[in-house]
Length: 564
Image 1 (tube, rainbow, N blue to C red):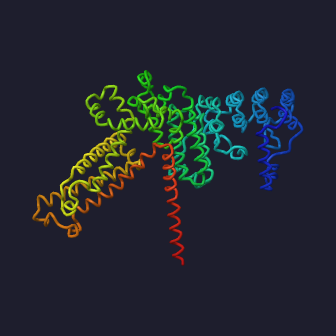
Image 2 (tube, rainbow, N blue to C red):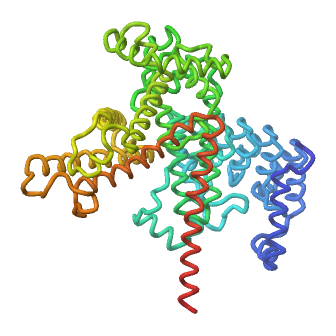
Image 3 (cartoon, one colour):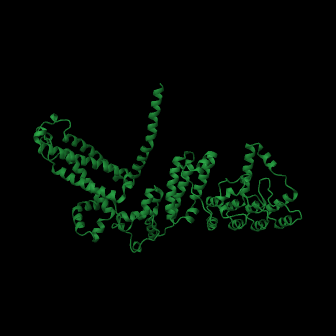
């Protein structure tokens, strides 16, 4: 590095040239702010550029001592030149001078990533622990504002930006810290004054701070649970991207950086035990998982997967789709069927048909012997999926039979007000009661907030509500006709002569709407297919994304016709 311009000095010269071309008075002001270089100062700076230690010492020991803080045409002092050239010996000599000013040399040393030089600079008496953090900007006069770094860039923030682990660890050991920005809607005195004085500087300060907080080095060194911190920070940055549209791309990039960091941590897992330890970690507990988890192959009942559920809550798609995570989920899904994925398609169909055919027998066996090996196999996720899918298929068949009215006299049921439920309708009531109980259990286990976030649960809620409304109306119609027959006309009457508000008519209409929702629920099963699942998700995102544009187009047409 000695004997030539470094990258930082080149960038600095380019910035000076750019400012001079855009602002004609820049060079003049710069000349007026300081005096011309003396011969000794020029020799002193040239020696610093060459790394000539003997010439530097001769200039400093001369009877007329040279100004150790003099700068060249690029505004660089001898100390900064030595830092840019990574000349440790020269830095040690210059720091021994009583009038030396650190200035931007510390920030340049952090950018270069030279730990030894950073240690020398922060050990200087003029550098205190508070100056490494928020006190950096307050320690420097406004007339000495840096041309290379923003005023809100402190040493600890810059170390986080550059992802310098060793330097950042050194600062943390000295008590440095980064204050988290206030919420965007904060109305405290400090935030209000910052917004009114310079809104751009206020926004840039927030961006620089969040960029430091999202640094992998900062997350790794300051957080007891780096993955959880990355999840929360990613979620917060996405919310800020929605609020500050001007800096949306920056916030989204920082959010993506946090997501990549959590995935890179998951990359470090080398065994299933380590993956289980990561995915089973709870938010409020720092204790290691129970040893029972590692005694044998992972079983779905012993895996809480709290971290995976948290990833779903914070919309961490990359973390959930990580190969390590998906491999564990696949092993849990096909637990008890290790050779399923190696079978042919025809053998898979035959095995599914055999399982569905034996479903009544297996259900009875599970009720009698739930703790046996067969009972554990029935509780596996794959078996549950087959049974639930088969059960819902039977439910749809019952709906078709009830809609076509294959049982009894069709004419008799059409002309009978408040008819008694048929056998198929009793079976439908039995199925609906079971699904209601299943939804209640899901609501109890997941909680209201998690339950309402899934729009499939809204579909189930509407579907079951319509069926319960149908059964209630049928019960009201039956009681009105069979118990209070004299008050509600005759029981057998042509349908064309029924009153418009007859509960049986309303129940049939509600039942038809509920059937539509029931058959629409088949789409939910398509997500398990590797071809239809992504297509369904893409179609849903396309519809949701196209809706605002359609609404805007309608609004624009309305305004156009209004002016016409």
